Image (cartoon, rainbow, N blue to C red; front, side, top):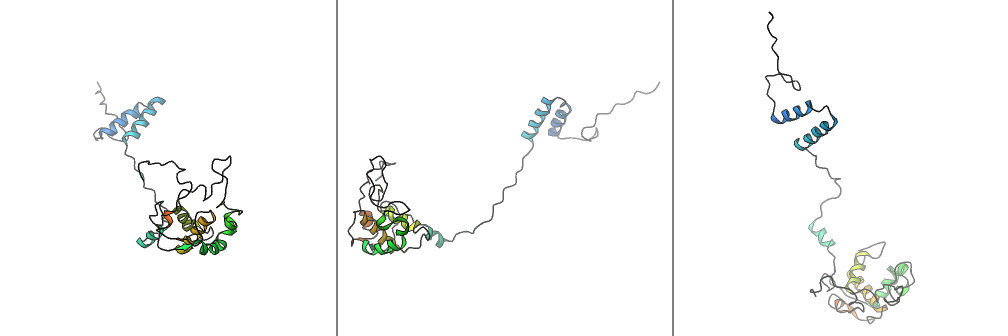
Length: 211
């Protein structure tokens, strides 16, 4: 009588019966063996995504620009706050600012701040009218904001090109043509924050308890 044939254990993914496999591989292997149905294949895929470690390569930056020096950072710190904090040394009057304005600003904003292609800087209808004009005299709450904006952004074709004395003078001129300052009054870091704008109380404070 022939001897019964010895049955060997089935190979799993190329492993012989005597080779050991990790518990994780056993789970995936056994799952794959029963993955004949579509729903089983989906389950195996989800299981593999949850267990297998995922490695992502960190995106590499565009390598543009260069680090700023401490001196360069100081040059960018030009914020002026409503109470005058941040105003630099310097001075100017409306009489001095008139010629600077006519040279640097009038081509866009018009003579005496009106009639140009850019925004109106003076005049304007009352704010409670149907179509109010928001100009320096009837809308802006703080005179220091004029200095901050002019120094930071004007003239349009060459921002930051004006000296601090020139910015003080232009600020004084803009206040003068809005009827808020005498022509020879000196504007500096002390006197400019003291100017009270007509619409200073026309805004709602975000933090009412702060002065």
